Length: 509
Picture 1 (cartoon, rainbow, N blue to C red):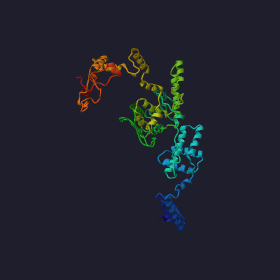
Picture 2 (cartoon, rainbow, N blue to C red):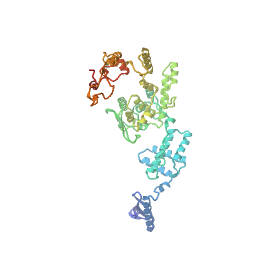
Picture 3 (tube, rainbow, N blue to C red):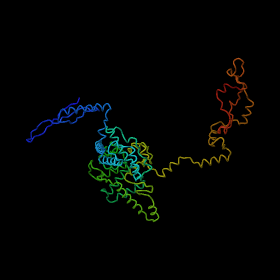
């Protein structure tokens, strides 16, 4: 039953005295179709408000019975208002304003591209066609997936918050970015890293960081695999340099999957951090290691790569060697295959070094803090031709196998009909079997001279005593080895060796 009431209020009059009163407008409180209490302003006329309460109750009853579209109110609202509410929900859930603004802008671009102003105009086929047109105009597959994920997240939020009857974009799948990778990264080699760090230590100040601070930043990134946002958040309280092992903790507010991450560190990494802390003297645990890390980290490391490569080339005096160094891809920010070495490439290098060092893929996934092992192995581990060539050493040498077969043919011991059989098998059986075995010729003469009848009662008919199988006889080859060692090794002819059952059923007497 709906409840009618006037809201009470308290205010101060002109003399500063507290005055209590009630509003002139009536209000209606009722339960909607979901069973939740809802308060709606009515009219100053009580009779009109009673009629409004009755109408609201009838509407709630019809909605609960499925006779009225409960989404009609939200469907009539412009999608731009829903997008603004979605952005606020992303921030309220713990997301950053930067991420919320980026997601909102992507969704707004998709809605403008498909000319959708209300929810019924948001169609999956329109979104697919719009993104395809943008890819033909130069948009990469990776960027297309970013727009699609944002649009699907918005559509899913509408559905889950009962603002839309269904998830309109649920059936859309992301593209395979491997066939259209515009920004593939490469892992830096050990020599490249060493040269980059040495050169950066003596480099001038860039992007509000001194050369030594940038070198420390690069080393910490490549030895921990932390992302730039996580590195930006680190304070001295984030480290336990005296632990066994030493650890670094990234707060949930800065971690990509929004939980505290505690990662082990190498002893050498902990040692260089401890030396750095001692050089700084009296430091507060809340002080950040890198007070200012620019948003243009790719430009920063590109400048240091360029400086390191120039110094590496000038380090030799021989003109020929200098030309060879200029022709190489050492410390290039973009190689001949189009792969780039930016700041995030240091994380790629960290995971690639784990794979090259023989770390189990599951351990590498946990150190990288990836949701799937496929992301760790496919996207972040880079192989070089030397690594691939080393894996081919496990294959058999077919040239050596062919030469062995030719040697067997030359000695007459290779039988094509019997298949590929090695001399090693024959030699092995020769060592394991008795050496005093009769030859096949001697065995054939023995077979012709020695025969026996079925002497056991079970082999005769009960009444006549004649054998149940006419003409059946048992030779003594059940008791003597029939073939030579070579015949046994190569599987030629003969029957199975003697068993206890044959000796019981057959006799040479």
